[in-house]
Image (cartoon, rainbow, N blue to C red):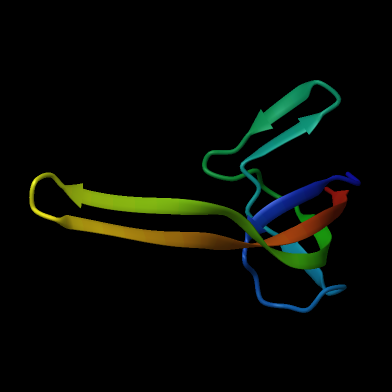
Length: 87
């Protein structure tokens, strides 16, 4: 609760509420519940804070002695979500 997570980019504007229905693991003050495949009856709700981009990843391909070199870059898009309630 009251933590930030970075999830793959989601639909919605900053300030919109989101909920996650499929929870894989729940930790209640030391007692851990692991779902098979999900924990039943648990929902996590949060609020979208902003959409951000991750660090740049460089992709470089080269074939020796052939004069072939290609350099590409990519920045993954994420959504910053503040967790408001678990349960």
